[in-house]
Image 1 (cartoon, rainbow, N blue to C red):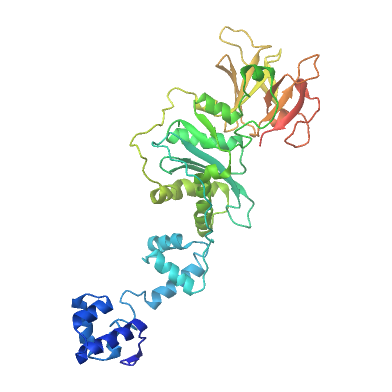
Image 2: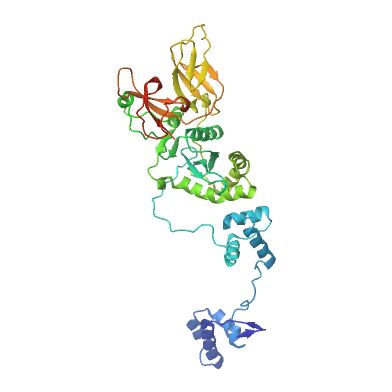
Length: 442
């Protein structure tokens, strides 16, 4: 059927309507009876009757065969395809739609962009698989009650660049990303640095939800005599910092239990990588600057929500020595010459307030996150040392004189650890200070 030179398709329903209305026009059927048969109102049946007088072609809708008035013009479609295939090749449909509006001045709906791309043969960035059934954990009602944190090793700066790790911390109540940090690898330094950023910007949370990474949870089976008496293993370096800040540590028993932060990393691997590629960013330093200056605020504006309760559970740091708490803790004995020899360093300890020396005392060594060293005795700072390379702490077993069995364990700076094969299991080898084995926490 043609209408003014255009081919018009007539459906079987419209053919049937025309046949019924022809009976009305011949006077064989009443219009009310026809309306009931066609399942339309009497008023609409009158309109259909008027159109039926013009012939079968009039039963088709008047706009059929015509281009919609709101159809995207061909030049805009061409521009969208060009940008999609060249500048924004790594962007998904929603992300690409946002960039078109914000940077290119082309305002289209996500569905319009999706249709243009699919008709041009551009496949979706990711396949949507049916989700498995998991029981949903209710969010905490207020900000600061729980922080989720984790690290994601990935080739964040492109396939031609070596992999690194993105550390992330997010608030459970709102889904707000509190801190993102690129680091060479996931470890104790990375978690302490991430915690420093969260606490400095927001305060101290009530708890953290985390996996059982060896930087966060002791995974060895050694129990010292003191630990057996207390009924618990002493924490890792990160765990000790959480205890000092009175932050509860909650451990997830499966990847699904960390679903929210796992989905965050999936979104970041989609969006953040595309934006880093667009900006030509290829290294950790520039990546961290981009996150801090541009990405994080925009991400939270799009995806963060409101907490159920309009209160905050963040605690103020107050008078806590945050630098000391968020550092690596070791121990060493001051020599007779009032110097500490540790990890290739010689730290001179000046006289105390009364002029007396510290020879023979056991001191607490703290390596700050910037690599510098502090020496404490009875919670008093007695010496400092310039920065050295930070290294993942090693938990080493120590035996007492006259005993072959290990009696306790001590954290060791990697530079001063026994020379052993780089493994995660204990190595039975005598070393300095009676150390008979070391477990690298990494």
